[in-house]
Image 1 (cartoon, helix red, strand yellow):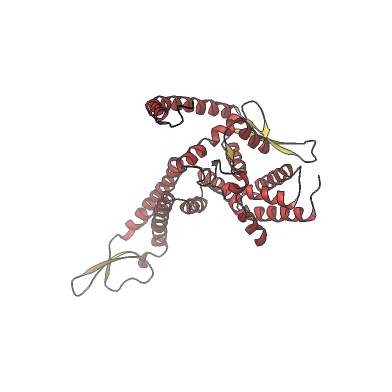
Image 2: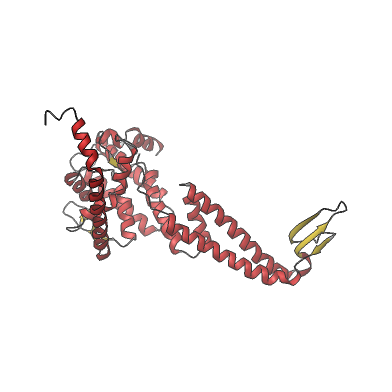
Length: 202
Length: 151
């Protein structure tokens, strides 16, 4: 059985688009998937390789974007569960957030946890490097009100630093614990709540 | 590529396959619940299809269509096979065929066989429980069926 030039063109365009959509996966997996889909199309068109039959086969597979999305979702979640990198974990949680409300909540809590934890660790380190201008200040105002400010840079004019050198152990230990807890939280949520979906077709 | 993609969207799997409920398809059947039920059974259906030996993707699709009422959307099966492989429930290998191109065959791993047995056991137990529960309802339905005289 031979494909007409038009059928061949339709197949190649589909596979190129599919490959492009799968770019987040590793190359070996992408090649494997694309070849399997190519030979599925060939088998389905073995009796009639007209463009109409080829198009019907591609329709049954879904658009390249839909088909790739089904592979990508599972792959990203699997990668998140096996990776220790917060960046990979956040990428996958973001992808989950695009799929469900549970994902949105887990992603939001994780972002807050990583930001707070990272911020505390950075504050602890900056306190060592730049002790006079890093800290947690309580500032009193003439009208009796007061405010808290944390950070590194110019010391507020009327502020009183509250933590002093305690910021170093507090920042480093509390920040590290928070980062670890956030990581464990994401891990637990993925295992507990993530269910690989049998996605809806077109 | 845009033109081709829009062409793919123009004709839906529903048009091609008729009105029977499909696994992995949007609400097509009489009830969304039925579609969800069928979707949920796809993993077990695929593991069952592989019970007697290795098959490639299209053979699995045809086996499910031949041996059951299930019509499976093709674009759903391959990603699911990929996931089952990642979970260690099936393994795959490319095998040269007489048709001029290789085919990717899937077969159950020992863990996959255990999983299939476990799922089948749950399914049978659940199904029996539901059949018992639905017995009075089925009786009433039979009595109310206007075609009962013809039966």
